[in-house]
Image (tube, rainbow, N blue to C red; front, side, top):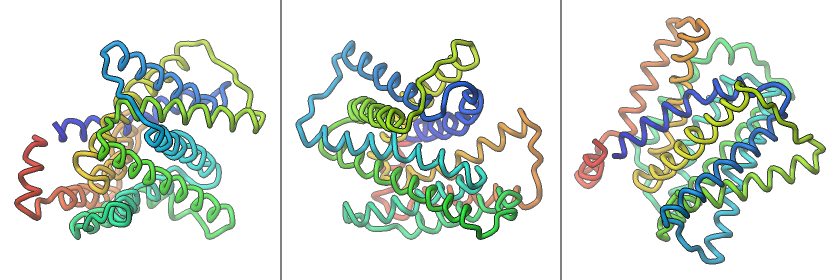
Length: 300
């Protein structure tokens, strides 16, 4: 089951860039994100109410959902969108892939979980592989103030993503499932981002055509309802550090799709990077103990 969720998350989030690209136009990007998570939250609530699976939450649960919405569905998107104005998408992908290492460190700090050496080694190897994959983009960057500013924003977005992972893990340890916490978190996040747009003077426009509506629906249902639920379920089942290796594999899927759709050309360094990323994946999921081996056997 875990393996299916893992592959589903990687495949969906590795292709959402197509939908994001199709959304560029009349509607401001932050407003599109508001539409995305507001609709996703409402769909989750409708599903949970119809199936009577909406879990009750106390005040503390709502407070954590509010923080999760701020981290996962609001601030990190603002950070990454702002960073994209200063640095290339490849560099953002490399910074985002450090989520595996940050999750391992944060799990140690907040939950006293031992940091597995194979997870750190696999995360570092995957990061090195992404560096090779995006070397043409990375090599053109100089240590300018704009580059450092973009890197800082990308790192802040990654830290927010990691914090959201920890908050979701905390909720799951308390017995709350990702379906319920995501529904509240997405609505809270969309509301806070909408407030940000109002304060910033960003207009709430809409494009009523098949291109925009189709891409929005893809981001809402597979990209948010399904993928975020699958990923955060993995955070609870496998641990945040192993689940976060998805962030290393997303760009790999995106490059393969780009090779078919946009004519991306594989180079020798990129192929070496591909090997490093896959080797890192093997290291992250290596079974160092009998206890972990028995747990991982349930993923098949």
